[in-house]
Image (cartoon, rainbow, N blue to C red; front, side, top):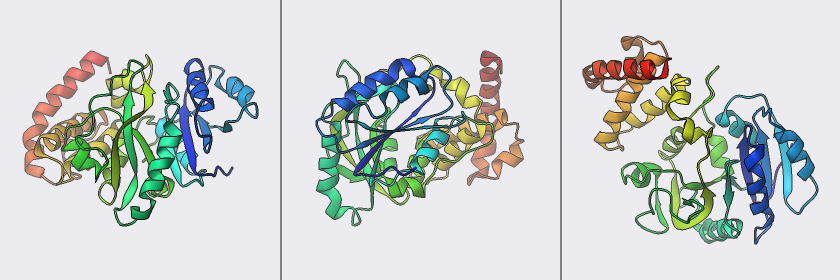
Length: 302
């Protein structure tokens, strides 16, 4: 399977037949149709495949459908990104949709920065998400079109929430999502922070992505899915706390989370501590982390 062109919109999906149609409609209404849509079905059982196959070849949207065994969003992204030959990849979730000028906007900025792509060490572009009410998710970037890395802008700049990221496909292939047997969740920012050690992004104060968080989605299911994927959460925490660019407050928080998830993973303190640069601080914080993990376990019945 070979998905090429200027831009590929990749949508990993699992049991989202009820919401996928809204995204499909928004893609049909794009002012620019110079893109392909790749749906990676992560083992849906709700009729998603029947629905998507009805769309194949019917409209102007160039659609490719691929179904795999259920393994989590990150495994679906890895599978899909491996097929993409286009220069740009735009990750769009199956319960969200795009503004009518989204593709036009992405390609305009890609063209604008093509000449400085290598000089600025760009991995892509970060746009805004907003709800159907027009309210921007969390916050605007402090400066429009600022070129900087994920840590400086998002972490140390205290700009949380999801944004709309468009990446150069070659860079995504360079940084696949880590996969752990039996775990179905890997936070995307674990890859973004690793990528930020080498690459910058252009941060653009324009909303092109509309999201209203759905019940049963990854954002809503929260803590439960994380404790069921403790190795992935440990990796993410370790990447943050061992990165000396990250501000001290965030690094301490991530160290606490690392301890919590290491206990859910069944690791002993000494074994888990091998991945930590600051061993002294690790053992100081270990007891509070153990207490919090016990409380979470009790609350979740884990």
